[in-house]
Amino acid sequence: MEKSLTDDPEQTQVAGYSEIHSRGSSPGTAYRGFMTDWKQKSEAGRTSWQLNALLALGLVLAGFVGFLVYQHFENLEGRITSLQGQLQEALERVGRASEQSQAALERATQAEQNAQQAALGRVQAEQASVETAAEAAQARQEADLATQQAELAREEADRIRERREVEIERLQRALSRIAETERTALGLVMRLGSDSIRFDFDRAVIRPEDRELLSRIAGVLLASYGFRIHVYGHTDDVGTEQYNQELSERRAGAVRDYFVDSGIDTEIISIRGYGKSSPRVPGTNPEERARNRRVEIGIVDTVIDYQGEAASRTP
Image (tube, rainbow, N blue to C red; front, side, top):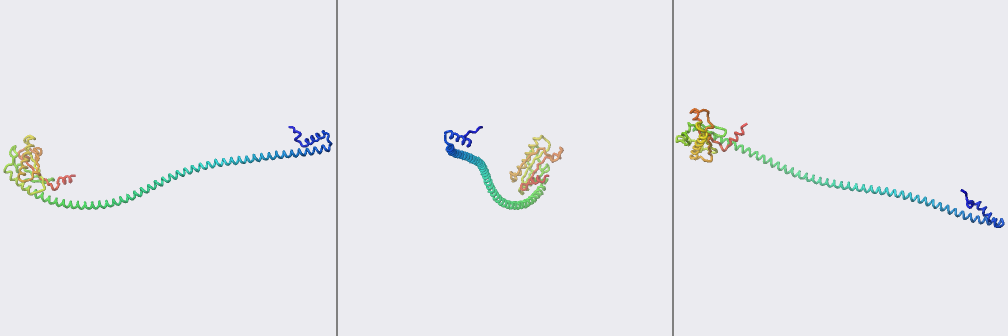
């Protein structure tokens, strides 16, 4: 690219000088004029160049300052972003800390409630322990008292049993002088066979000769107490079952009626007929049938439960 004449000072100087010389001026005058003009133009050129340099320098400085400002804003924006992230993280930490604090508060509240319940439980347990101890002491006292009472009751029962044993033995001896009397687990049984009491055929009426024996028995029973009397009627095997059943019941009833007429309380006497179902001995000859035709009187002690004692001794 070629330079213009105005860009080179020497060329500009030559050109100016030639222009002045061509106007017809003297060389000295032309030269001085030229130099004056050239100096003015040089001064103007230098001033313009300096202004341009200052402008360029200003632009550079402005660009550099702008760059610095831009970098500063970039750094500031980064720091702001970082601060925002830190702030968000801090807020999250504060939220988590708040949740943890709330959870800790709830656990503390629950722990306090548990402690209160435990304390209440201990108080109740202590009260229950005191009450249990008192109840145990009272139970021991009651047990001791019950043991003493049971011991006294056993002693009293033994005394009663001894007295009843004496009474039964006395009763057995007295009745044995009248008719066959046997001791059983339930008391006494008198067996009034045909040799002791007789009934006419197909009848249930007490014969006059048998009343003395029944009167003696009634007298012994009236002198005793604490007994219940059961009268059982039996027949031999002659006749039908129904006939003998009814006959045994009527004969047992006749003996009961005689005892009642003699003064024995009807409330303590019961009857039952067995017919021919319970023979005393097996066989059908006259002697065996005579032994099976009988009235039995059962005497059971109502003061001592011999039936219960017999059951308790049964293995």
